[in-house]
Length: 108
Length: 512
Image (cartoon, rainbow over all chains, first blue to last red; front, side):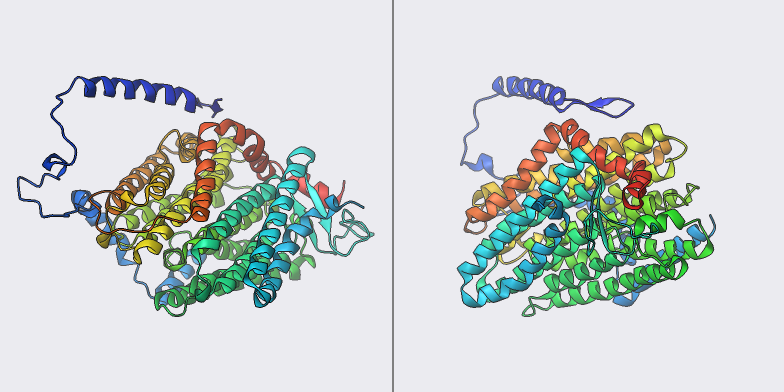
């Protein structure tokens, strides 16, 4: 049950056993915690810096990961710049790919 | 003579016949059409599986069209003049991926597609695409790369047949233009090789190609055309357009279609040019393009607000991992075989894993679109309350795509990471970074679409669609929990067919 790579191995069963141990530890911590939580009360509402949360509010993933996306923005903007959506540009990049491939092949 | 010897041609001919006969049955009654589709799909899958078993147990299988005996590949004088199907470990492996994806797509399509929205047309195009992919994977003849055109036409039509919407036809037009130019590049290369050697048989050409300038031009053209059709950066932009706009049951087959082009690329590099590529430059080119593809696509996935396009960029990034694995293998094929074969196994194993994980994500996105009428992440939320199974499947697919253990994506990426590290640690660092980006992207998508308070009440997915997703989820779990079994019995024969299988391939076709 081991995937041998030549340098080491990967065993999902060992990983599952370790994960079960960690889960057990987490459950033990949780079990010893405070018992004041009540489902279906205001305790289930998202905490937005103490602001009043409107009924049915949903904090979507784009909000949670706002900082993550903004942190990557300088890199993403450069990559996005050549995704114009114009077919002519698609063709240009195909020509670039073809030129690189031909160059590498012809020079070897 | 038993039917067993005709299995290679039946696996292509049956779905082809299925495609052309399906509209006729639909004219009679839709139940007859559905019955025909089930029979054709079941027979095709049985043929593909039987052929894979034959290959994995007995070696390369041949089928010569028009000969007195299907195994008589050459005429007197040792010249292979007829069309030959050659199924080795790699072809059989690709056939299994195609069969799996096709089966899941059809099961899903029965309840996903609506009669008044071109169900018969979509199913016809699906069978045509299925036949084209299997034809590409089983052919031993460069001219039969004409199946590339069959897949192109069927794929574009599947993307754009919903003409009552504005964006699918536009995406189909872009893909068609790119496919046409890519197909012309491949055709030009085939013409050059035919002009030079007077033959189109891959084994015969491989025995003759010696690295002349014309051979190199043909290789450059083949690389350009097939890399583009595989969705490699920087010629990848058509892919998110097409995948994002295609209906879910078509998007999953488009992923397998991309992999068929990738297979064509590997066949060209390892078998057709295997005797002439003595320097690692082309291997480095494939490795570099793979690394660029996985990183650029992962970065583009970060800013997507449409669930379909987000998954599409995830799919393109996975192409990068496959290219990275096989590129590393190609780079070190003659100098460092110890980890080169491991890299190849990783890249090839990832093809199967990608088909299951990306396929599952596209099918789950289809359920979301069907339930809410939109895939806009800004308008979705709380669907996990009503789409419990779908949210579970999406989460499983997302974790597998990001390479989280113990799922299948981790097993193949682990092989790629370890082997690429030995070529250059920078490659591994970029590959791991790509996986981290994808994990964040897909966790964000899952949180946005399925978690949170219920924003609307939606109908759960029908049983047939859930079963189709369940099949892919089972593959993800099985390949993740016992990867060594599948690597030993399926991936290793495929990798070795490319790695050191050229001589066996030539001997099987040409004799000697």
